Each structure stands twice: as structure tokens, then as C-alpha cells.
Image 1 (cartoon, rainbow, N blue to C red):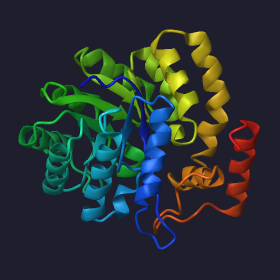
Image 2: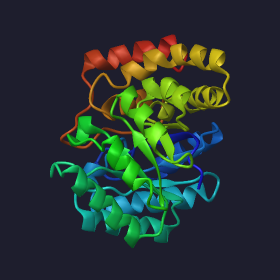
Image 3: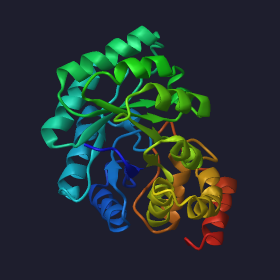
Length: 292
């Protein structure tokens, strides 16, 4: 599988009683595919994987694969801070028909770089599916360092990394040191343009939940070398890049989708809906961008 383009880190919509909104999830998937995204990513951080039960996690992956029905690749979030659980989720994703697995670095345990390497190596050797690493030290407190990424990139079915560490030096090291077939993917919407300019191959995006068509045009303009248009779109989208992280993701993006009449619902505790002040600020940006 080639990892290139715009992939939406899907929210998981919930009903008023807190249960999964399966039909709403299907409608959201249709919106993404109809607006030219290159793939979808269920049960990542934005999909509130941390508060889904094992059964819910697997159900969301199954719905995404079933409803996409081959129209776009499905990259299933399968990471955990338990190697055994990550293997379980990854085996399930493969059996369900996922195109690839997105795997966050182990959180809370604070493994060493050797521990991170052995964690991913064990999963990759156990489950024959393309794997995309995911480093987001703001969430996990542990970064996948470029030297570790270089080692992991030599494992045949580890095909890329979603980098949300926020360091352009790190991106440069990854691109310089890893094989050309290894994909560096932006995990931070506001840094997607410079990451692609350095040689990154796209983005796994939160913002595309709200503006998939515009994000798709933006990412592909950058990938095609049309930097004038990409810069123009970057600055048009910039207010959205900022406002959708005004509080902890995915509370702001869920608020925006609810305003747009899309299926989102509230986040699960311990996350809470955004404050009224944040809601008004989100609404203002959506109105200024003519999304509302």
C-alpha cells in the first residue's frame, strides 16, 4: 500500500445515551469519500480509542471497512500500551480487511527507545499487515526518536510514520535517514505544508472531518508541487487549524460537526464538551469560512 495524500482521522459519533452512533458513522464516512479524501482512519486519538471498549473498538473498525467497501483504504488504529493488546487489535484489523494499521507509541509505561523498537518489531513480525507508526509525545510523553524510526523502517511491513511531534528537525532527520519508500505523514494539520515541502507524503488530518474537500485540494496541491496554491489554501485553512485545537481534541471538532448538522454527539468522559466561550469562537470561524 502506498501512503500518500489526505487521510481523515475520523471522529467516533455517539448517541445521547453515550452509545455508538453506527448510522451516523456511516454518514460521516460517505461525506469524506464524496469529498475526495484518499483514505479514512477509524479509532485513532480523534476517534476516542482510549474510551472505547475492546468490542466497540473492533465494531468501529468493522463498520468503517464494510461501509468504505473498497472505495478508499481504511487504516485502522490498533495501537496500545500493551503489546499483547496491540497484536490483538492488529490481527482483528487484518482479518476484517483493513488496508493498514496505525499504531501509536506505547503511552503511560514510558518505555525506552529499545522498548519502543521491540514493541513494534514484535507486532510487525506477528501480524503481516502494513503498519504506520504514530508518534505524538504530547499525548504519550514518549517520542519515537528518528534513530528508532530508522531501525523500524528496515522492517518490511512497517511502511511509514505519522509524525505529530512538532519538530521540523525530526521530520528532516526521518526523511534523510529512512528509505525513500518509507512514508513520512503529517500528524499536525498546521504543519502539513512544511512537512510536505521537506518530502512528506501527506497528512492524517483532524480538520478534514470538517472541511474534507478543501483539505484534499490543499494536500494535493502541495504534493503536486503547486506551492502557490498550497500556501493560499494553508492560510485560508489556518484559522480552522487553530480553532479545532482550542481545547483537547476531539471536543472542538465534535462541536463544529454538531453545528454543521453532522453526526458527532458529545465526547466521552473524561473529555467534556467545549465551553460556551470556545463554542462561540468555533462558530465564528466556521461562519467566516462560510462552512456554516
